[in-house]
Length: 262
Image (cartoon, rainbow, N blue to C red; front, side, top):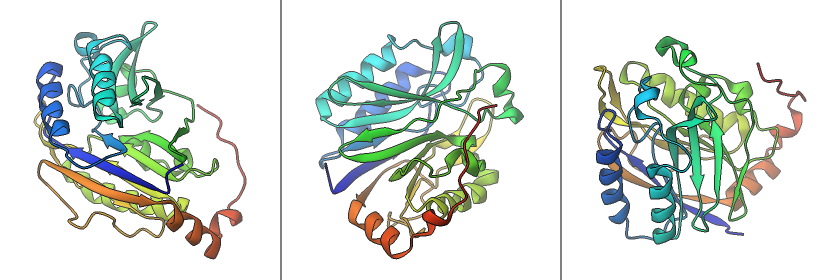
């Protein structure tokens, strides 16, 4: 078990519906990371941008992007995470992948589909609450629009880290900033959000603001917000979680409930 976790967040422009170009760009950025890192985190739909054209650009769990992730994770000896459009048993999923150096993969399918973009007409919603355990850390993955729904993120499973990957547009970036910080405070966990930058193929603009907040809602990344392409680094400290929860046992006062998927 690691008492600290070294995180790298890659905030990047995404080439529209071009997995080959995006994989090459991310590989260059990943290979440029010289420090020892435990987890590298990429944005939502990092191979394509946030597109509803799943029929044309989706991949399978045996496809090129998953193989690429497995190879890079092994070479860099760290976990790599992000979401990809996956076709699985006739359905399309906005699927978060957590790929470990040993070749194992955990997945989380986006639960709250973005109805403004008619995501629910193309993709199948996930209904499973996922807990990733890595190096003794308990991580709960989420994707973009999930951030607006606090019940789905509620810390009923004693996680240490709440992790969001996103394509969150510039006009609503204040909500992104506010809700990420709120999720950290209300769940007494680290909260990480990785967003993209640049214009997509539909003309929507994204301005990053990727961030890491600690249990008390304090920013962990010194330069914040950041609105350009960047690799951002953060160190998570298990002792910070344990001492703060012991001193301020707010989670013990939460009302008990059970999530029933829609």
